[in-house]
Structure formats: C-alpha cells, structure tokens
Image 1 (cartoon, rainbow, N blue to C red):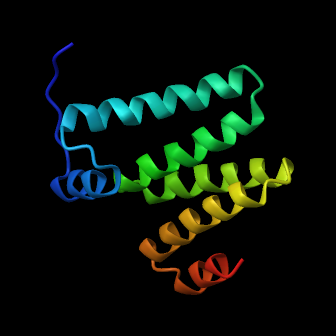
Image 2 (cartoon, rainbow, N blue to C red; image 1 turned 180 degrees about the vertical axis):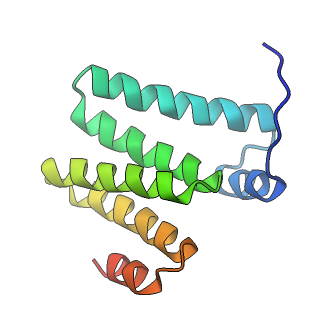
Length: 116
C-alpha cells in the first residue's frame, strides 16, 4: 500500500542512529511490527513477550516524540518484568523511563530511575 505521511526529520534521524535502519519505510514497518508483537503477546498470554514488546513499543513512541504515551508503556513493561522477577527487564524499562522523564523535564525522577 502506498501512502503519504508527514514525519519529523529529527525523529527519523534519531531512529536511524539508534537502529541503524536508513530507509524511512523500514523504520515505519519496524514500529508497526513492534505494536503487533506487543498486542499478539498480550492476546496469547505471553507475559515475557508482552513485557519485551511493550518496552520496544515504548522506544518507538519515544522516538516519535510521544513521551507521555511512551512513559505509560514503559511503566507497563517495568511492572510486567517486576511480576516476572526479571531484574534485567526492569533495568531496561527503568532506563528508558528515565530518558522519558528527562525529556519531560523531570530530572529528579529521571535520576531516581537511573539509580535503581
């Protein structure tokens, strides 16, 4: 399907830098794949997959400048990993959540999350 989209140049460059994906279409596909993976894991009762996909979706939302949405998804991922007693997953989610808090101007919250 061919469509026209308005994409933020800074977000595209940040996504390229973080993922190594150069083509805009491939970046959009990656975001859609992450959304589908998250919702599929949720529907199938795959708790670990849901946590991982939620964290990935949060990164996509963050790169799209949707910080409040990313914050909610990262919080959900962190809670999922806590339920699984997965310290590594919690650390990744907390680090990502800290980056969001920085962008939102909440430096004290960000520092607390980085120190967890």
